[in-house]
Image (tube, rainbow, N blue to C red):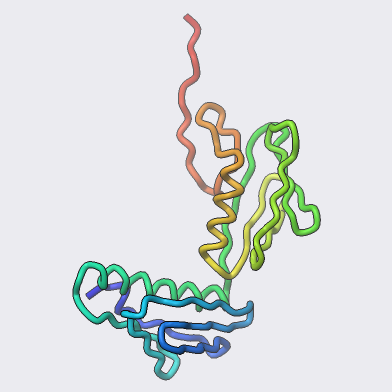
Length: 178
């Protein structure tokens, strides 16, 4: 049996779970999330503990078992604590600023790039070179952070660009004079 899939999920007191078949709605202090899971997975809620069971031992059901459990855990964690990805900008003249809810970044192009966050996601600016993508849906937070990083990923010669905080960028040696 999957070690991740068989681990029970403890639901905090401030979280309300609505379960109907393979549809689940999780409501907490930060908001609510809804998701439809594969109908072959059996989701049980008993006295504040959620368990996920699979019908068989096929490779498909084994992989779906752990995935379903982790998605439910992320929903519960998202409505209570939330998720965030920290990004940093490195490079001379590279910076970010907030214009309303949109993020305006200047990263070496002839024009600034304006990125409007998807609903449920917000951007928090710590200083002009450090910011966070914050939200309750882990998938959307990661997607938004990846989209922002994709405008100017770190280049291997000087390391300039947008990177995740703590991301290691392998640098290449430049040309050498003959």
